[in-house]
Length: 208
Image (cartoon, rainbow, N blue to C red; front, side, top):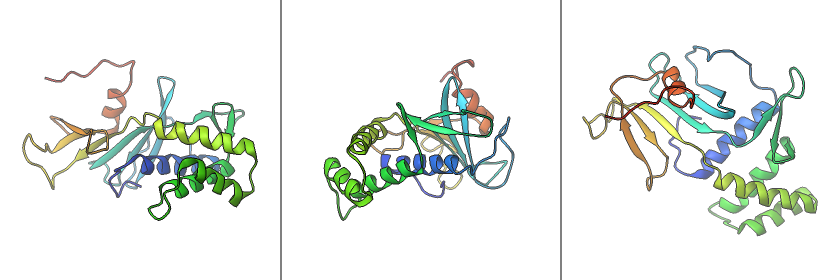
């Protein structure tokens, strides 16, 4: 998941859907603290009433990349050991994940590039869905495409280090070339540094 550079919003939506699917299929473990391991790790952390994804590469303890982004679905636990996802008042299940994926494919596949309305009609026909599913797909697609992903990437980039132009340790804010910028760091960051940085109840960090 972290072996490529995220370049557009569609990649981020696909990451969200993959994480949502793993949650629905119970492919996760609950921890009080972020575990230390030498494998790629995806952590979903609730901070200040909202959920954030922290994606850590395999190079513990000297992580070269840590990606942070927000998570667009409401997560709740109706009972012990059970997890549910919601968008507005709609429960998100594997069926809805498949619907969204198919709509993305019709809308953003280089060979197709159908308008959103036409994509939804195609998905309704393919999956034999109902009219209310069309309303859901329209609403959630607009929500996902406009949702503030809060993308930040921590880099320990010794291969491209170039003084203050490309610092060894830095944060890349935003993913698009049209908007991204770097914030140089004076030292290596660990996951706890990022957790503190993004916690609204912790003291702010100041740029000199």
